[in-house]
Length: 272
Length: 175
Image (cartoon, rainbow over all chains, first blue to last red; front, top):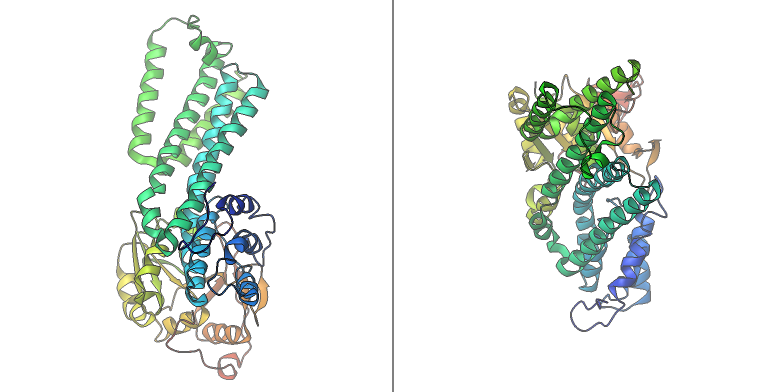
């Protein structure tokens, strides 16, 4: 367990305690305070490291930190750690509040892009792909929960550790981590898995394959002879990859609309 | 006209602006008009992290933003202008630079002395009077947190709102 020590003078509680509290950062969410209550609950152990060691000072700081605040819940630990560090260093309250105001937007935007728009869809699609490949549904669910939660636990632990270590200097750490690049990569991977999944559903419907991915993995014969149709599918696949690579996210919505239209046509035609 | 969004939101650059409005309007430039932030490099660094990497982010005093409104409106690049408070909006609107635009009231949250108008819009009596005066002066005002939400026009001013309300505060951003 990492021990909290702001300057070597304060033994303090372990960051593990703060980490566990951060898991509940959204528990007290409300429109008035957003995650403010959870933020105060999470940072409370670190407030005891304030240089004055004064109960009234700790209480006043706790009251300040339960005011409205918002951030992505998985990255909120970065603000918790950094604010704990600033408080432990005796930073004036006004500056701490300005730091919170400045960092919340980045933590919200980066977290939304990384988790809600990239990591969660990717892990969900992988679970669906596993099901298509013949995995039992319970295994796909357990696998999804395991992989998804492993990712967010790692992210939460990283965020808290960086916040505590860097304090007000977290901007440099966030820039170095380049979370937008991770988001783009995960987003691209998700789009690829989505394409594979939908492509296989369509192909299986058209060719009568049982479970296409499973058949492919087991080396079972392809349901129809390679020919013009296969070449067309390969061509479409390559074109899709190229367009996706060139246009990135701007093509996602039109592509999704086209795919839904194709699926609807197949469904209406009785092919599904 | 390429100022596509003038928004009052105390969070300035954040998810609703970047993802909600940004993905709809695709801004190439975010201008934060705020006197305090314009002189604070460490805060600018943190705020700028929330913006897309390929967008320009500028932090300028409100007076400079007011002087450059015409330039940005004539520019082809899509620009968002973000303000922290109603007070800053009033300072920006001086001289008629916002004529023809509808200002977005996007996020002023609960605080001491503020009354709730919408879940994301809480205003002090001073803010309300200032908005009444702006509306009377012809500035379009609409409360709307996200482009997918229903826009709520600011209340119609009473006939003497412009004359009877206190004049809009001048010169600061009220951060």
